[in-house]
Length: 296
Image 1: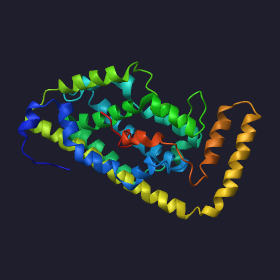
Image 2: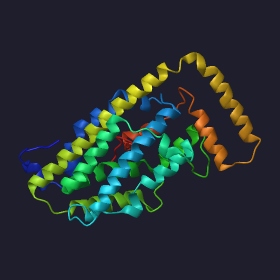
Image 3: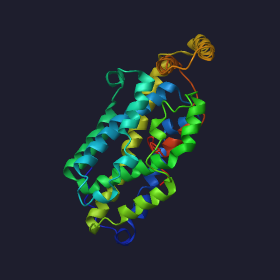
Image 4: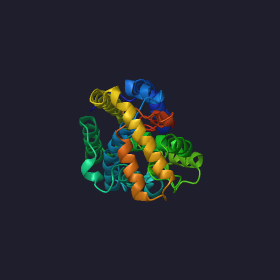
């Protein structure tokens, strides 16, 4: 993913945040128009698909935050180092434990596209740390833009507990105002000193993040299609009846956290449980995207 392009005269005078937004406009649209994202936008997605995305995001944010810690004092990243406000790894771990149970670390998959994304982040952090800000900016500000609205939609669509289990990814306890924080982040990022050549490298890396997301969406779509082939429609009715039985049981028993986890694992059998448009987050996430995620 190396580039040797000459610095653009426009990019040398434009703020970095505006330059990234302009430079990624085309590839951003490509990410939004992948088959997987279109299905998300039509609410044609199951809990299993949601879990696949969440698992991929965990691997991606684990790599990103490892490299952020490595480069937190680098002049090309230090101004936007906000771990308490933004970091998502621990939040995703909470969600995965809720969905998969205590053995989630052994159960979650890491697809080839996810691994490629992870490897790119590690390469950037260790060899081109001046461009790490491109990965952080496109992900975190997209996540933050999703915020509380998406949390409420997902909570209702997936019938998640009002106490917030399964939704930690969408919760930014360290940010009281998303709008003000995004303004602060952009201001800090725009203050980073870099020569025109470095700025162009950052813009190219921002484009790469979207390309990596496109590859991830395409692979997830393939995995989902194969999964649906292994779950023919004839199986839907008995599974739905089982789900309704679980609902009745829930109303007749006290809420227990472990029972909630068991419920989510059982619902994972459903081949097509709609998320009722919460997935607009990924036209963020991404972030949101999570994966694409991105109203910046």
